[in-house]
Image 1 (cartoon, one colour):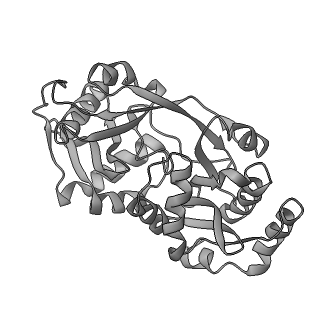
Image 2: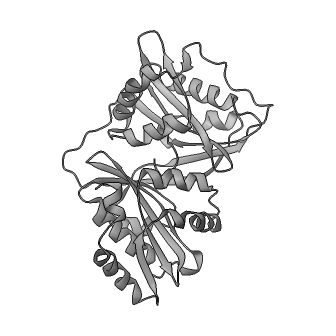
Image 3: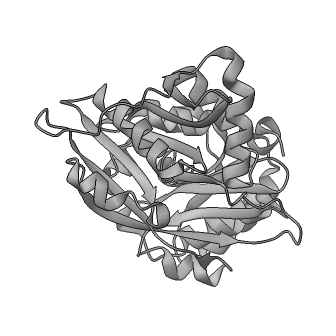
Length: 309
C-alpha cells in the first residue's frame, strides 16, 4: 500500500475500529495520522519518557504509514508501520496516553494496523508492558535488544580507529543496500535513502569492496548510532571499529545505541562508558510462508532505532 493510499483510507474501515473502542470509551475517533498531529505526538511520547523530537517524529512519519486516535479533538494515541518491500514491515511508535491505557485503544490500533499491513511478516520491539497484547496478536518473542546510552565523556577511550574505515561515497550506496538486505532479509531501501540524507555513514573496506557500514544521526537527546552491519570473517572487530569512530566524533554529547543481545557488544560498550539502561523484546509475526532470510555471514549489530528496527 502506498503512503498516499494509506492516508486516504476509507473512513468506513476506520469507523469500524472506532466503534469497537466506543464500548469502553466515549468519543474516540480513529483516523490516518496527519502531519498536523506531529507536534501533539511529541507530547504523547514525552509523557512516556520517550525523548523523541519533532524531527524524529517527522522522520518516522515520512517513511511510513500511521494511525491516530483523537478524543474530543485531542490526539491520544498513535501507531505507525514501515513497509520493507512487499513481504516485511516494522511496527512502532504505538503510544496511548497514560490516562487512557487499558481501555482497548491499543488493541483497536493494532487490529487496524494489521489489516493495513496485510500479508507481511511484521517485526516490532516491545516494552514489557506491551508484551501481553502483542503475544495475543500472534507475535513471538525472539531475543532481546539492549539499549546503551550516556553522555560520552572525554575520559573514555574507544579502541583505535581501524585503517579500513572511510566515509561512504556515492558509489558505495548499492553495496550498502546489498549488505543491509543480507543482514536483515528485508528490503529497507526507503530507510537507507532517508539515512543517506540525514546521517553520517562510514564503511569498512579491506581492499576488496565494502564489507560493512555504520551510521550516526541526530536523534532524541543527542545522537543515535545505527544501523551497524558487518560481515565475516572480521564482523565483530569491524563493528567495534565502526562504532568507535562514529562515537569518537560525538564525544561530550549524549550517545545512544541499540544492539542485539547476540551481538557480543554489550560488555564492550559498557567498558567504553555506554551502560545498558534498558531492554526491548524483539517480536515477529510471520505471515509469509516463503520470505528471504538473513545471511549467516553478514550481521546486523545495531538497529537504526528501536521503533523502525
